[in-house]
Image (cartoon, rainbow, N blue to C red; front, side):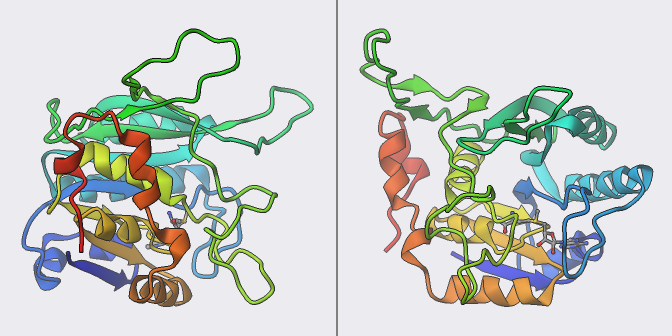
Length: 281
Ligand SMILES: C[S@@+](CC[C@H](N)C(=O)[O-])C[C@H]1O[C@@H](n2cnc3c(N)ncnc32)[C@H](O)[C@@H]1O
């Protein structure tokens, strides 16, 4: 498989000319869009406190550019804070995308408490496509754990729904294991690193082997790490040179913590799993 890591502002890179230059003279089949959320987080190369209007104008511009280079029926998964659901849906609709699902990614342990409202315990991922009909949608089956004294076990698992509560987040204030990339003091290198399990699910659902996956805000490169293992081509764009370096390192020497093969068992009951998850030597 082939992957490309492009350093720069994705606004300048989301063009046909760039795809041709990096030898992918073909359209994008799936985009994972995980931008800074404009919540005053510390980024080295980006100011995360834009005026709200300017931020959503920016997001619209990005969403439209991705739309232009996406194949017909191709997909976008736009991750955001739950409080921005209204803006996300409007941003996608006004840039031509067709709504498919609003996925609730329920966090396993972390919640943001509040004295005036319920604690926040999930993030949204809006799934939309270019045109009403999806180019690829693989209906994954999972085996949710059975709670004690609950009904009988389902022998063949269940189809995945739009509530994902089985993917552990890496970004909360507890020790999230070996998966987050860490510095010499054990601190997480990038506070917004996405779990490989999340990208495995998205890529398996909306692409075929050999397809082209894009991540315009690639961060530590989770999307390309997973794409490579699933036999998909990929492009990661990133503004911060330190993140670009980490991405190159992550791709040149695969860590055990980045190995997705352990998740195959979760999808054991999926009909065409052999076709959508090819064996890579
Ligand atoms: C929420 S993080 C993405 C994390 C990523 N999903 C991962 O698994 O590591 C957003 C990233 O976008 C980068 N970024 C901010 N502005 C950008 C721009 N204009 N073009 C490309 N990357 C940008 C930031 O440096 C940051 O690494």
